[in-house]
Image 1 (tube, helix red, strand yellow):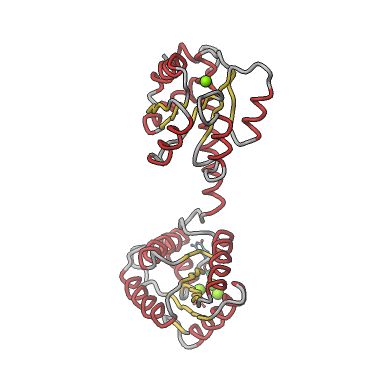
Image 2 (image 1 turned 30 degrees about the vertical axis):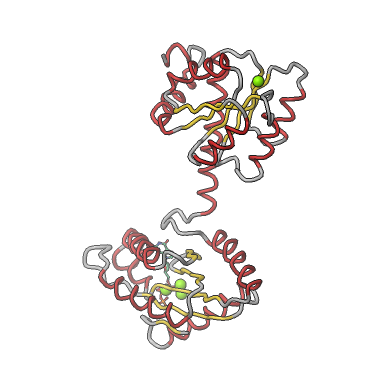
Length: 311
Ligand code: GH3
Ligand code: MG
Ligand code: MG
Ligand code: MG
Ligand code: MG
């Protein structure tokens, strides 16, 4: 089948094979009022092993999308009874981003303006009916590939590659949002800054790989200990947290985390991991100034001998 489909391109054959491995996880909703077209699409996509779901009009498509949030792609006809395909795309794009739902518009319209309308309102691609099987397949595959690239890009931009925690930028962006919300509600927030103790020694004596393993082990423990807080790796061996919990409670929980960290095994013979922390609680003015105040507490914790939390 792959050979037949990809007779024009070896590169396409590889892309097809690569997708076939994961296509059984891909759910495609086909919103189309014509039984013949719906069945044709199902028949064309079947060898690719996608899961296909049918809708006969826009309202049904909306209901299905609501009930099945794991749908990856919508193939949508324009002229349907009730809500048109084009209106449906407009509506959906208000809440579903391109990396959540990929949309492929269909129409028998020959004027050419519908394809532009579909794309302007958020469809990822368009096919004019009648289309041949190969054309549908290529477009489905290329839009899914684009979605996967977009997801990978978003992930790389948000998360720190070593630890998987939010990177500095993502931490700041989400932190600023939390602050604005807390300000509106007159709530207090706590900000904590953490810095590993004598970390340079670990690198110097046990190697950089041991240091990396320590940062990974610590981050996992940090995330497990504070599932409801916003966490981030600000850089190097420095981490931060924003939480709605009072400083006193955070301080206790950070001490528990420190005790746990002492038991973590990250390299043969390496010393127990420890960190110092500073917390500042207050009605937020802005994120930067609270981070700075927490950093001053951290500095005190270091001066007082490390391995402690100051607030
Ligand atoms: P202090 O208790 O005063 O914080 O001492 P320290 O040694 O932890 O502080 P210092 O700032 O002198 O050293 C931090 C070290 O962290 C230096 C750097 O090599 C190491 N480091 C930063 N990022 C990474 C990383 O991604 N991997 C590894 N292995 N080490 C890192
Ligand atoms: Mg129709
Ligand atoms: Mg440091
Ligand atoms: Mg330092
Ligand atoms: Mg340090």
